[in-house]
Image (cartoon, rainbow, N blue to C red; front, side, top):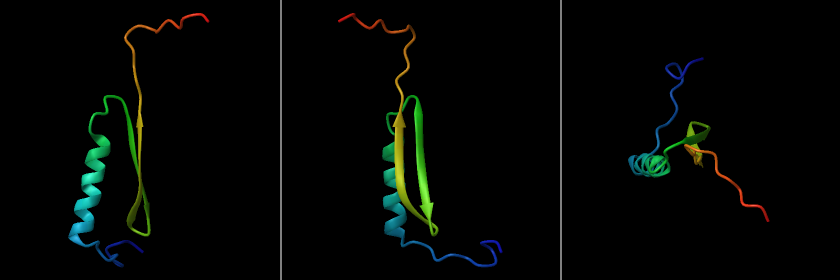
Amino acid sequence: MSLIDNPQPQAAPEEQSEVVRRIVRALAGIDYGSVEITIQDSRVVQIERRQKARFAQPLKIPSV
């Protein structure tokens, strides 16, 4: 059965706006990385941000 046959109830507009704001905030400032959005029962329940640092030249680690 598809969502067209059995549509899920929609979140209130305020909830949708808050989710969109949080997703945009998670995306802000990431040069390399990912944003993962976890959905359960047609609702966003988690937003995870992974940011990576990339270097043009390998970094030398000082000896201790």
